Image 1 (cartoon, rainbow, N blue to C red):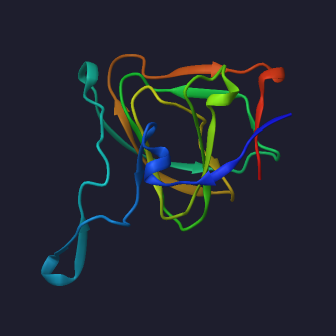
Image 2: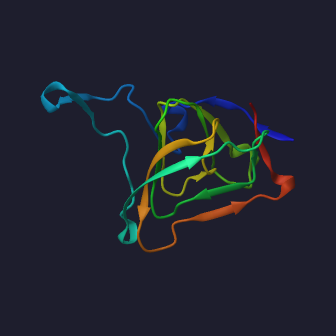
Length: 163
């Protein structure tokens, strides 16, 4: 059985796949007469290709059976895709350079205070959570064109996330 180890999600480790969205290190600006804070520039949303616009949605995810088998990878050729958790619970991020190359896979353990913005054309696994009913705010592309490419792996190609 091929497994990929979990590593902590950091901006440096994830940089070639997109952006880690977190408050650590971000500039905070006081607003609303000092009763609120605004944190700008957390991610670059890339959705304008081929007449696209921003879609804001809520995903509610369920835990997958263990061990977690990676059987499908997907990417979005026309725009980035941002996931930000709405509760402080850990979750998992799996990315790769080439779905057919097991050596290119990386698995990250994200905290409930970290989101990711997958860059355009980055192969990633659909949402992986550690508890049922985990909610995420998702910013991605709406508009014309086919913005989803999937790569299904054969059973013998499946990769498992080490936990």
